[in-house]
Length: 423
Ligand code: ADP
Ligand code: ASP
Ligand code: MG
Image (cartoon, rainbow, N blue to C red; front, side, top):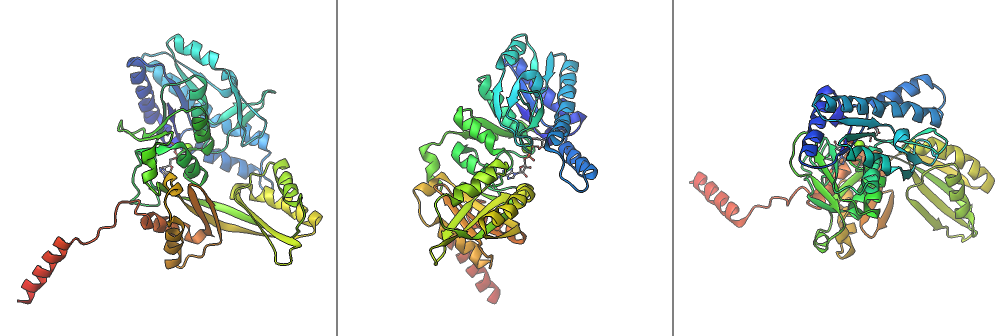
């Protein structure tokens, strides 16, 4: 069971989560809990770091060292709450549980988990509580898995201990057809495939981290996303079934904070693109969509790619230098967003792109870049149009339910009424 920040935001919520774990254990299960930092703690820590570091970004190792403290507060409080309820519990940090990652600070990847220790404690009747989001390198440095990374910890642990169920408790009832905070008529999805969820998570649906879904798919761990405030069923994320393909579009997503780097007049020679992205990888910049076109002169190409706004400063530093070495031009746009629709049904249905482009065009929203995969279509747009665009495409695909058309009966009744009035 994983409890996100809002689900452990204060003492009462910690006690409620503890109660749920104890109840589950009493029903005959062994329980592992993964917890996030309380409420907005991670944001506050980030803010503190930027108050100290006024002119430079924080050193990444120290940023991680600071961030991991948030989850450590929750694990011990959770263990205390469970002990007070008369059950046995033990809390662990990543280092104590052997959650080893690589050394890419702020976006580390899990390499191994020493599951033996977890099993030992479970077998002795304890509820095991593990700090989410954090890892430790082989040399003993603290790392983090990227913001929102506690559910990566959850799925990795579930896979390592061969858990029967993997429950992600959060502040919404499940995965919705779009972010319910932005789209009021969004609907809860009962079941969704790993592939769709993976696309949605990568495209801005932050209810789950995309690496959590990647893990879940790889190890075939079903994830149940549900609300910590009640016991109703949420959304099951599972392998695709044939019936899922009947639905053309399952969800819409908005990734708000994107920036684009455009390199123009890049000499059109074999090896150029490889060189650009080798440099980006060497500097640990995560690149999103890449678009390359050869210019009419057939000797130069235009290359553009997007990065998360959080990576923009790193990308800019690297690309300024790169443009000088390659003798090409570089320009930047840091006010972009990406709106997308996702559905496995796109594999077998047509007309999806047209419907999406028309919805945006009708509202006079300019599409800057388009990228597609077998199961998604994404349009890059200006950030000021982002939320509106999400609502528009959500409506265009009737994800909030069918638009109410006046049935003949209703129309007839109305006609009768007006006729009466006239009389
Ligand atoms: P937690 O603290 O539990 O990890 P998060 O804030 O990280 O919770 O994720 C839950 C939030 O994700 C929701 O409150 C919701 O606003 C947002 N969200 C964005 N898109 C979706 C979606 N399609 N379905 C459900 N939640 C979504
Ligand atoms: N506390 C971390 C964050 O806010 C990790 C998480 O909650 O998933 O990003
Ligand atoms: Mg989260």
